[in-house]
Amino acid sequence: MNLGQPKDIEVPQSPGDGISALSFSPQQDYLAASSWDNQTRIYEVQASGNAVGKASITHEGPALDVCWSTDGTKVFSAGADKAGRLMDLNTGQTTQVAGHDAPIKSCRWIDGLPNMSNMVVTGSWDKTARYWDLRSPTPAHTLQLPERCYSLDVKGPLMVIGTAERHVLIFNLNNPSTPYKQVESPLKWQTRTISCFINSTGYAVGSVEGRVGIQYVEDKDASQNFSFKCHRDDKLGVFPVNHITFHPQYGTFSTCGGDGNYFFWDKDSRQRLKASPSPVGTSISTCAFNRTGAIFAYAASYDWHKGHEHHQQTAKNTIFLQAVKDVDVKPRPKK
Image 1 (cartoon, rainbow, N blue to C red):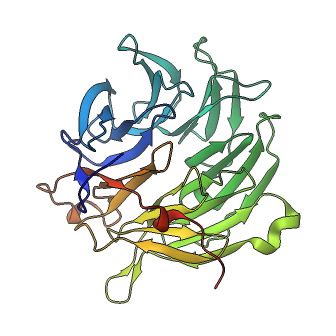
Image 2 (spheres, one colour):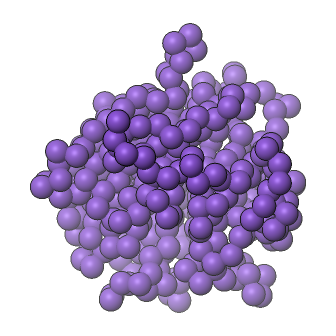
């Protein structure tokens, strides 16, 4: 893909309210964006780098998360209307396939495991996570969580759920009904986001207090666990880490935050690879790499970390696309 400009490309027809999640198709350059305007929009990113709106899923409340099927034909959107809605891109039809007793905060597709293929997991503020096989209106299994789900992620057999009160539940999806481990977040403040390593050996957790924890699942790797500060400013203070996303090829990762910046990091050599040139003028609420890691998408959108009194009604919510340079995401040797 040749974006052809040093300046990042703005996605047209951006959402009309806060952007809650971004997710690229695992098969082609389609980008889904969920928003507080009750819509999840699907865009096609063309070879020129320009994006075109293709379809949308409508909720009866804010859309809070979105994920894709492995074959790229379906988009699952989770909403504050307590509903999980599935769009088949081949037919354009949307159906409700999941439900909870409170808003659904997070969703991920599960596939390629002996007992779990073509399933979705949803995490809700009703203190449950539920597995759905999409052909049945009732969940295949319901997990009782210690608190409200704030974030979850799946990579291969690894699922990690972060809840209120800093609980972290780790699952081996070959045994999906019982946590493999339940631990406390290594960070002292509320969990904002969780993202699994691409090799499924651990996860990164981000908090509201400008800090990221790198955590390995197995005790034998505990010496590699560490935490670091980011999205802080000596004058402006400390900001939440809104989202973490791993590069699909190199396993390096990006963070984005309430300070309006994004950063690329290498957890193995423990160094920062790239910083955004300057803050975007509002929070960056979420970000995503495409399937090859050649495109980085990020959303300039208020994250409400300072409450409604700091919300600017006129502020745009904008998705930007950036052509990723190899040097910015490739692991570097330890200093």
